[in-house]
Length: 464
Ligand code: GLU
Image (tube, rainbow, N blue to C red):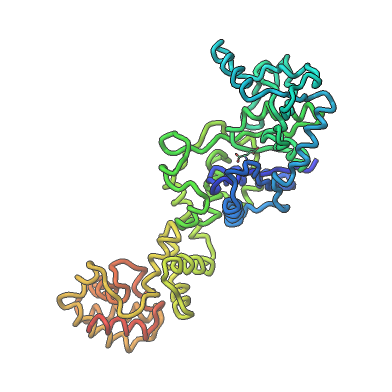
């Protein structure tokens, strides 16, 4: 049997990071077993589904490298098939037409509540002959729920879960307007798509029993189910905006690398010993559902930042340069070819300490600023006193130096010594002149990245 999994988001908003983790688990499980991972867009709620949300979900999945192996299936495109299966169940006697009016259903619910019973459909049309159907009422199709025994699901994460069948009622599978209900559509789609393992959030666990009714009534083999606990915030409440970023693309905007986000999401709720750095290939090799925990996990943004730093250090410098330029361009700081080369030259010095691409971009921003550089208040203070005069003499000394880091470093040291100053007392005013700030990559790296002409120009601007 070839393993086939699916991720089935509803396009009613952006892709939540919990959804991204569900997608990741589906992909890893399929890859681990040499199977396929599919995507189904569950857009049957037409009032709430939007094309923008579909596009955002697809973009989020592309960014996270979680795109499916086959073209996405849109649930609405399959409505005639959902109806066909409902009619098949009707023909088999496993479902029936129910002609209740809205008022009757309300009265039924009110009576149940008044008598302290759960508001279930009482099955009144189950054995009635359609010839008794009242005129002018379009019927729904309801499935016959089993009345005795229990439904047992051996969930690959939650273990054995069961419900007494008396708890289930004859749910509607096809509405009077011919549209399928959600729980019915999901089963028909999962069956037709050949899904062998349904891996999803545990908020769908109770739906599973009702979905089993459709599988069983059609005589279809049920897939394996794995219900993964949801992600909570640090305070234990379900993760939401007030905890921090929750949309997958927000993490991109905050300067995280997609592979760091995936690694972090994997470790939220899945573990292999104490391995923390688990890149995609390793994750595919190790991923098993038995290692998914049963307890809700808590999002820890500081831990994600730390892991992101590790991925930044492992990343290819030219890719980081492209990303940093993208972040800066988004802030309207644009680079020509010279600027691009300056940023690229700085990457190896920004890489060791940064936790996000935003931090790297902030560290590289000075290289793209046009002359004259406007120093911030702290940098301006360094240029007061004899700072300017010293920079004037330094410019003359640097003018003689070969323009590579070693030679520049040697020239700075020699200058400091000749002046009887500490190296920092030379480097800090120089940094202020070159970057407009008191913090930057090492000063020889700054000089080398800017090049001779730009560096001497910026110093001259500061000297005035
Ligand atoms: N469309 C559902 C959701 O977005 C998922 C249903 C499923 O995975 O079966 O929560």
